[in-house]
Structure formats: C-alpha cells, structure tokens
Length: 166
View: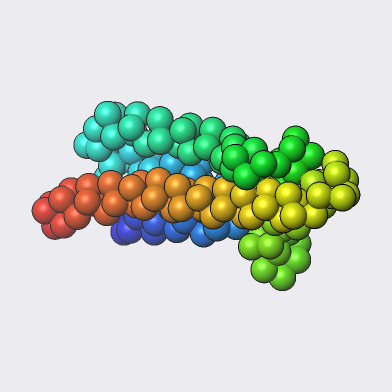
C-alpha cells in the first residue's frame, strides 16, 4: 500500500507540472522534476538511474532559461523594444488573474509596452505583440514536452519495476 501512495503523489506532482506548463502561476517544469526526484528517493524508484535524474535536471534548467529568454527574443525578432519585452513579461503574470488572460496577457503587455515606447508606431507595436504571443506559445510547447519526457520516464520505469515485481 505505501508504494501506491508514492505512485499517486508522484503522478499528481508531474500532472501539476504539465498543467503548470500552460498556467504561468505554476512553475510546471520544476514541479514535475520534483515529482521524479521524490520517486527516485522512495523505495520503489531506487533503481531509477541517476543518469535519468541528471538528464531531467538539465532539461529543467534548460526549460527555465528558455522561459526567461524566449519572449524577449521573439519580441526583439519581431522588431520590438525592451519596453515590449518587459510588457510581455508583466502581461504573462497579470494575465493570470483574468479569465483566459494567460492567452492574451503577453500580447497586451507587449502592445502597451511598445505603445509607451513609441505611441505613433502602432503597426510595429502590433507586430512586436504578435512576437510576444508566439514566444509564450513556444515556451508552453517546450514546457509540455519537457514535462511529457519526465512523465514518460516515470511511467516506463514504474511499468518495468512495479509490475514486473508484482
């Protein structure tokens, strides 16, 4: 029975990580990694190689770096300024408190930032805002992939360990 509790806890943590990949208020990748690390430290997961834990740790760090730089990079690639990049970042967090705001928050934040920077260049502001939205969507995709890899490692190891022993 204690094994089942560990399995459920780890599964829930990784699932929250996947949900956090879409919702900016939850640090999805670190939560999923924490779940896998807990699994490694429990009796059932002790045979999981530290190589896989290290691999997921590197992916977690890489994902966190991408989350920080991707919106800034895409705003810049779409002709935006530092104001647009800052606005997009603020928009991600402010958008979380609004219904479905995590979808339009980066766009509106970058738009407002660009309009503060240069009110006359509305076309450039919209273009940079689309870059912010694209950056946010790309980050969500990267986060989902990394959390999916974490979940896959957990499920494969669990399948070969738990079900082969029982």
